[in-house]
Length: 129
Image (spheres, one colour):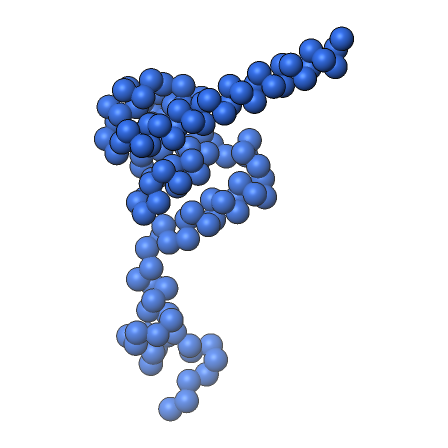
C-alpha cells in the first residue's frame, strides 16, 4: 500500500524510527538556546525576563547543561538580574550549580556594566558642558 502525503508520520509509519518518531522523542528543551538567542536578537534584552537574560550569560559559563533552573534559582534567591551579578562571589557559590568559574563570569558582567555606566556618565557630562 502506498501512503498518501497526508499519511506521512501516521498510521503505517507511526512506529518506525523515521522523522515523526524522532520529533516525538526529542525533548522540549532541544533548540532552546537557539530560540532564546533569536528572541534576544529580534526583540532585544529589554524584552527578556531577568532569568532569560541570565540564561544567555550562563550559556557561556556552562556550555553543556540546562541552565534555566539555575537562572531561575539565582533570580529567586537574589531578586533580579542586577542583584545576581552584583552579589558577592561567595554568596553566588552558595547556590547549587554555581562554581567559582560561573561566579567569576557573573562578576565580569558586573564589571563591564559598571564600566559602561561610568562611560555613559562621562559622555553625558561632556555633552552638557
